[in-house]
Length: 417
Image 1 (tube, rainbow, N blue to C red):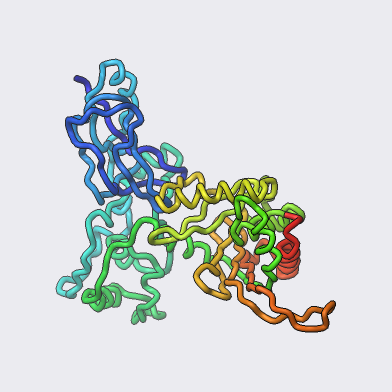
Image 2: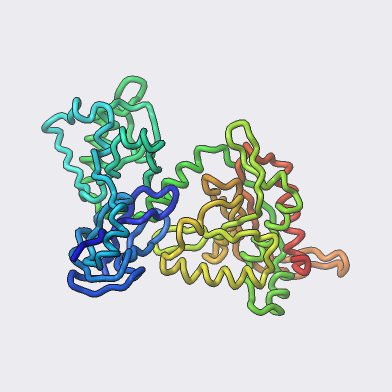
C-alpha cells in the first residue's frame, strides 16, 4: 500500500521546533483520520500530533525526547491510494544544513586541547532547526527559534562554544573575565564549565526555557513599578453573591480592563518611534504550570462579564494543568494579571511579557486596622497590596498612577464591574 508521511505540524507563528513527549501508537496499529498519536512540547505548551488520514501505522521514525523542526517527517501511515495521492505534494524538502554550523569561527577555532572541560550536554538539547541559509533567504527569513539567544561582545570562538552548549549571555554573567577590558575568554569559559561539572544538573524543560528567554527579553526594556493598598472586603462580599464565583484575580483583571478602556492612551505599546494602539482590551492571567508560568489571554475583557470571565478562566486552568493551552491562546494582549497572593506573598514586582506593556500583581489579603471617619475609630479590613509594573517607554509615572488608582476604585466598588 502507498504511504503518507506523518509531519511535525506548524504549532504557532513563532515556533520552529518541538520535542517529542510521548508516542501513543506502534507500527501495525490501525488509526483514523485526525487521531492524536503523539504529544510534543514547545516552549509554550504541550500539543498533539494527529494523523493526516486513516490507515495503518507503517513506522515511527521519531524518538521520545528528541527535538524536530516543523515539517520534519515523524513516521509513515499505510493508506489508501486516493489519500496518498492527496498528500503527495505535502512532503517537506530535505534539510540542507544546520543553523549552528553558520556561526563564525565554529570550524576555524577549536577549544584548546587538554583544558579539562567535559561539560555533558544531551544531543537532543544541542539539536537546531535544519534550515539552510539559502532556503531561508528564498522564503523570506528563518522562523524564530524556541529559545532565542542574546548578543554580546564575545569572540567567535567563545560564541561557537556557547552555541554548542546552548548557553546565553546571561549564563556567562557569573564569570569574571580575564581578557582585555574584562572580556570573557575561551579559557575563562572552559574553567567555568569545569567548575560546575560536579554539580547536580538536569535538562530544563521547554516551558522553563521559554519563560527564561521571555523574561530575559522583557528585562531589556526600562521597567518601573508602583504600588498601593486596596480594601478587598467589597470584593469578598460581592463574590458571595455570584454564581459562578470569580476569584480575586478576575476582579482585578476586569477592573484593569475597564480602566484601560476608559484610558485608551494607556492601552498602547511603543514599537520604534510609533505608538500602537490596542484594538481590543485583551488581558492575560498568569497560571502556574508544572515547571513554569503560562499566560493565556482573555479576549475583550472589558466587554465580557465577570460570570463569563469566570467560566472561561476555569476552562483555561483545566487546559493549563494539562499543558494544553495552544500558542494562539497566549499571544497578543496589552497587559496581564499575576495573583502571587495565593502563595502568601504580600508584595512583588512581576515582569510584563515582552509583547505586553504592563502587569498587575495582587498580594495576599490580611486583616489590618483602617481609620473610619464615619465611626471615628479604627475598623478591621481585609487589605492587600497591589502593584503595577510597566514599560516606562509607553507609560509615565503619572499615567500609571492614575490607572492604578482607577483600578482600586473599581475593586472597592464591585457593583461597577
